[in-house]
Image 1 (cartoon, rainbow, N blue to C red):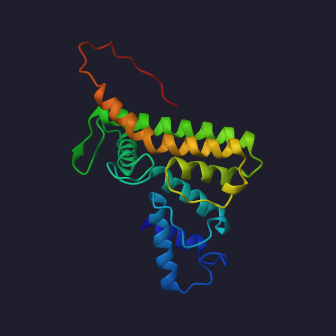
Image 2: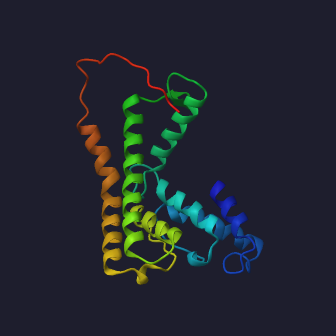
Image 3: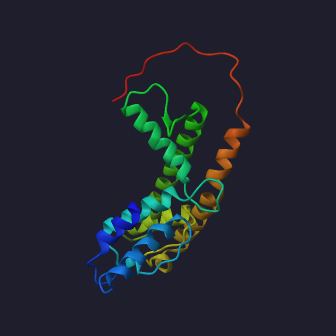
Length: 207
């Protein structure tokens, strides 16, 4: 619902996207484009013509992806939700992270954080390489990279303009994005071992 509202507001008057449509069609297309970035990759408007803030919001949706256990890409909604709930619990100075009347296991939080940080690191690395090999704008390249990582398929239309090296990096990003987060999560579960000892506790300053 939030995604639909954001896209509807940002593209309402854009003559190249939602502008020419009547209100019911605007709402329908906005809803479609808030769902499609999860993994489907279909578009009803030209993504190369949308505003920069719409493009950036779509990047966030593609990075989050769909639900765990589905064929969707991204870090998964469950991972994002757990990290958000953990952050909210920290801001409220709660000793244990929880949401909807349930408390999270610390190892689950560690896994979610590991998947999210490693995914961001990989995307940043691929984007840095594309910035060096391609003479294109930062935001379109970021969109292309996250779309490949989330195995979404949306594009602003720059794919044919990429060099051979750029296309190979996009292929690698799609492969890692398809197998990486799932493989990493399964590996962390399989390698988990009960602790036989504990280290002394210490206090680390944050901020």
